[in-house]
Amino acid sequence: MLNAVELGVLDGCANHYELFYFLFAEVNYGGQVVRKSPEGEPGISVPGDEVARHAQRLIEAGLMRCWRIRDDPGDNGPFLTPEDQTAGLYRERVEITQPGEPEFAAYRGYDCVTFEEHLERFGQGPHEFRITRSGIDEIERPEYEALYQER
Image 1 (cartoon, rainbow, N blue to C red):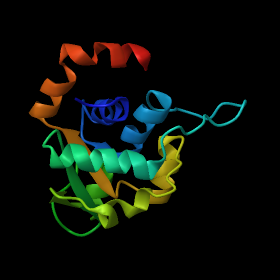
Image 2: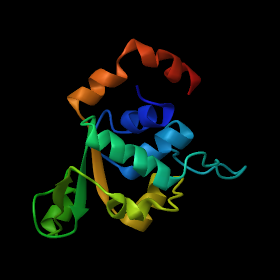
Image 3: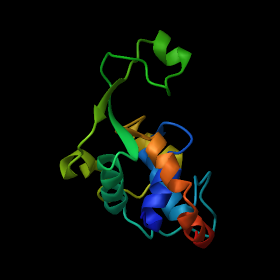
Image 4: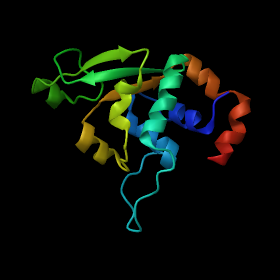
């Protein structure tokens, strides 16, 4: 059975290929933060390295997939605009099936509140995540209804 953090991680990449920001934001803020509030930044309840550890467990369990994004010539990633492609920018996606702690070291101290902050620090990387069919089947189980209501 998944815990609330793992459920949030899977929800963060349930609709699309997503960068780490969306997993982190789903767990900590209930979704993407469009702009910071004048009252101050929302608090982080689950640190980035902990979100990454849960993602690692879900990848190893086959409930989600992960790709390392490289700014090398290769296949055109889903986030490149036609202008980027015309300018010769390409991204290579390398699937990571057994991520270890060094793979996700970039997420130690991760504290991006908005997607723009993530883009400033990491660009369109360093990883993309996507839920698998098994992951979708898992989060749709009735046992998780109470966890969804608590969030």
